[in-house]
Length: 422
Ligand SMILES: [Zn+2]
Image (cartoon, protein in one colour):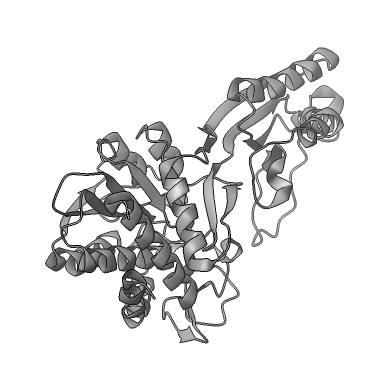
């Protein structure tokens, strides 16, 4: 075993303890609980070891309030001579618990080499592994060239605006050369990026009338029905025919996709407690929210044009049809080149630690890489970390201790390679 691997092996209990401690701080988002507590916990660990720690609140970010302030931590270790800066970024927020747990989601139970809890795999296990990797490296080479940074950031699960986007807008990545985001993509895979996103709301209009005389009104729901029918007939087949060269996992996401997130029309839903009967009215409005995921080969303007062209086609064919379309959210696809330094270095480290070639994947959904790419203007960024992606956001989420240890070894070797050229 080489010296770095030994340093990490000796920290196995510490790795377990750290992961369990992090899970036991329930950083639920929404609403954004205990963000300061988790940042202070990490500061209390890293500052005495010589890390310069900065707690940064994203004032004015979505969700930021006195009750739920958006706190972030950036910790920096400067070695001896100048050199590159390697940055590990983890989000510290976790999604709601949901139903179906057979364990306490915040007890961080350890059983059979697995630690269970909300956020275990997404991504407190990855955060812990990156800390252990950096501490082991610094213990061996305290005067390493360059800098190592570890950030724990808010709100990734709700778009990252109070976290990485805020830090990037403040110039936090200006001096950074390499970024690893230890999201749970599995210890033998490098995630190069993600597909693009466009969310929009489409509304059709009608005219209200008594339900017994619908001919006196104009049904917005029937107009929306025509839109959905046209989507089935032309848009969904078109999207299925668009394939990408991006290695997206799962493979079903290697096409363009569109989900209709919701549909609302006519009288509002009164909920399960309402015991009355609905009122007979012709719907004067109907709305859908679409979630279009697009490929690096597609332009966002073209993606939007497909939908507006479809709406215009329905309009031309249907008397009385009017609509509005409103953009809600958009993210451009991001994909780091396989020859980028952080990719090559991580691939070599995976091969050394695991004795097999690294896999390359792209995420079907987005994560904080988008902000590092777009706002931070840094392309040399990947997601790499322990854990099984399918377990994220699920009940009985867990992370494997051996997986964390192995990925910590990989991350430490990346530091060794980039900072020491070893
Ligand atoms: Zn995550």
